[in-house]
Length: 507
Image 1: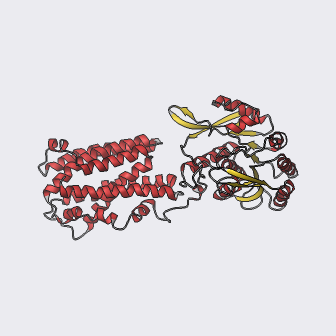
Image 2: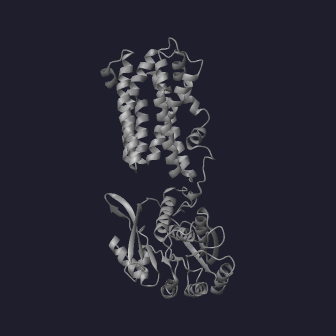
């Protein structure tokens, strides 16, 4: 470690004019991990998300000058090496690192040979220099499967299984690196009906393997994943993180960076999200729920919680026929809401999430019994409730919620369900605490009390906590994701407004 207060990593790599890979990706990654990044540029590329259409190499002697300038003054706790496009550059870098053995203890080499867009980045005559000069001074090598096949002179497609990856990693270690992290992103595997990426870590010193599994994320936006992984790994090693944990953390960093998209930047393979560890909030320091409600178009939320149907409940002037129709439809809505909660249990990734959703299903089942008892006060029989034709408004709303849950993730489903929970919670408290609300002689007062009651408000608080937790994982550094979830919430709110309209119109 450096004697300075902040760990330092030097990245030796090419410049990506598109900003998603190379030096640019490395600096973004290291900065997000609170690591100070120094840089040595080996090549300047002309590229975008579609292709690399030009490479201009920096003279090898000038690359050595950059390395020497940094290591002789600033120093480094780890060194990440990316694109080295010629044999002379590789030889010069390897030679220079031997002059600084103390600072070159943790050299992470990403053998950049082929870009995400398919462009060849490493000249064929440079592979010999890479193997014979750079790998012997490498601490950890991080090839993907195609790169491993090239380094081992295997036919394309020769590596097909985890065992093949283990064998390849061990053979790669014989070329010099102390550790090999063979990445499986190009070889997703189906394990127990789940599509996963398996990365294999081989430690030559202990002759041990460690396999790391993560969900495979279907996306075209994977530009810079290799650069980012090796930079993150160097960053964690610079922080003093133990090897196995550093590999796990770096892989997890990339997995989140892929899944928390920045949206489509460019028309080809877009960049991943390097900002997620920064916890930058697209909702400007507010809580997620507050930000979502505040971001609705003007008047939408008030049109829901202050709807004429709600005001009619507050002052007791709502026609009983409208309320009766609403109660029948609300029972049908509860059935679909229970299905949505069951779907949420299926979508859950932890036992806590699954258990919480299952508890909601059980709670709704009990609520449905109380609902039938409550309906009896208005002369509505159980048969009338169960056999009531479903309103098109009800169908539109509930099918929207279920569709969001089926096509999206748990946050999408919760965002679609949230207007109901949050809105009824706010309406209950608002009407209960408003002195203008009619109490004596108001046939709807019990309904108001139901949603102002401690048990319902506790459910609202629990729902808010879950939304905030999901947002922390899926939204906290992605403005594009926030916009998507906000749109889902807005549509759910508009459908809630239509639910009130349905009660008034009774159709």
